[in-house]
Image 1 (cartoon, rainbow, N blue to C red):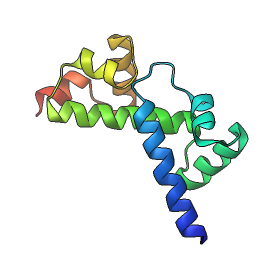
Image 2: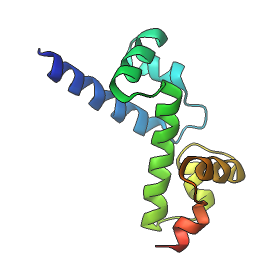
Image 3: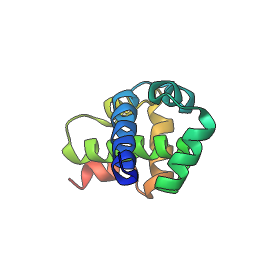
Image 4: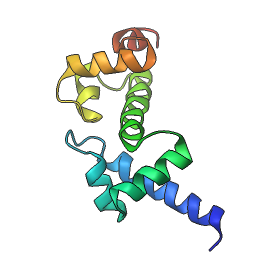
Length: 112
């Protein structure tokens, strides 16, 4: 298998496993390592080289991007979306969302 095919397969698996597990509040890098079957150091090196982000930032960004999509779809309220992307505290979710995007979740919801 060529390098590009191998990289593409790894990224697809990484995104699939992470997206499936982001609703779990306690989902973290160690869990991702177990699911993908590589050490924490290997995962750190691979994710950093492929995305420019640490695994923690990768998971956080995945959660935030999913939250953005859910807010834009106007499918649920902010509390439900917070739970859906792995935050048990809607206030903390709102704070992290604002830090990430510079907008509050309510302003995104209102703009749709």
